[in-house]
Length: 279
Length: 171
Image (cartoon, rainbow over all chains, first blue to last red; front, side):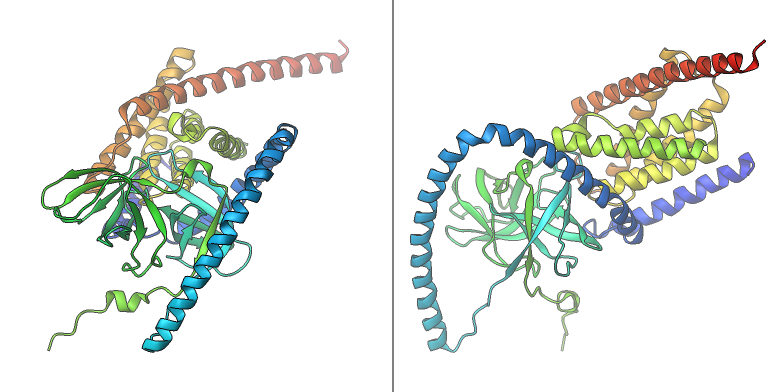
């Protein structure tokens, strides 16, 4: 190819990429389509191999260090298990009561979601744009499927390639989650602040919000089920029209090694997008 | 051979990146190994190779990053092509020149990323200036270190080949 043809190719490729970019601008949470899926299919297995290798080395090193800590940990876990068993008994009682009340009102309760374990093969939470790649060896992963850890909500699946899935974290600036304050049930929208934290928007000035209040998913966005822990309020200030609320995520993204894919029936896309019929 | 070298470099950069992220979470903030591979390719002076390398490296970085797909694609394509065009006109062989090439490429990438983000997002979150400076500095340093290391091994290899040839001839 001569220089002129190369220059034309450069302009053509650049234009193509800019068109791909502009197509995503109306919905920044949308995935990059086929190129992203191909990239994910190629890179995720490499990330997984490196992760497994590194985990093996770290595990071997830790094996020598852990023996003394294991005894203490075992004692602590026995006590915790006892406490959780009592809590389970109490919750079973509450659940039975709710079931009886629902039956009396002829109300069909949400059957709840099931969890599927997924290994985290790549985390890039520190960079400018936050991302996570997980691998679920069983079951079918779908776009928009919520992803949680034992501590709380991580995000949702935005691209799937075989057993690998790319997850948009809730701390991503383009992410938003329907949320509510546990105390008072006041609802708002959680957004990533792009710096690793979260902000709760659209909570009116008259709402009683205090530092330390827990924030849960409200289930109104049609993606996340209700009641998943998102974080705790770390700062409250009056803003213009609404309160300016900063939320510390419940999940420590630096300590993630396993996640759970939530299998639940999400609101169908056509119901979200269907226009309102005017008479 | 050049293609093989590029893919080998990209593979090594990927492995080092994944290990780095696993060991130090701030690794991707502090350095950009993919850009090092891209600039190396660009410094060969082949505009087509620089352009295609930019597209591929951009694809890799976009896949590993979140947000809008294609931000790195655009910036890396420009950086790869521009580096090759500059290398066609300027002979870059001294360490200071190499360091300058990596510094400029890394700085250009950061500026282009920020400009694109400003254009695409209504309220963009730009990389922190301190981290951007660290990234430019470390990327340039890593580039120079790899350049020096490769130069050293190339000269040793050449010398070994010369000696071997001399022995075979029995003059």
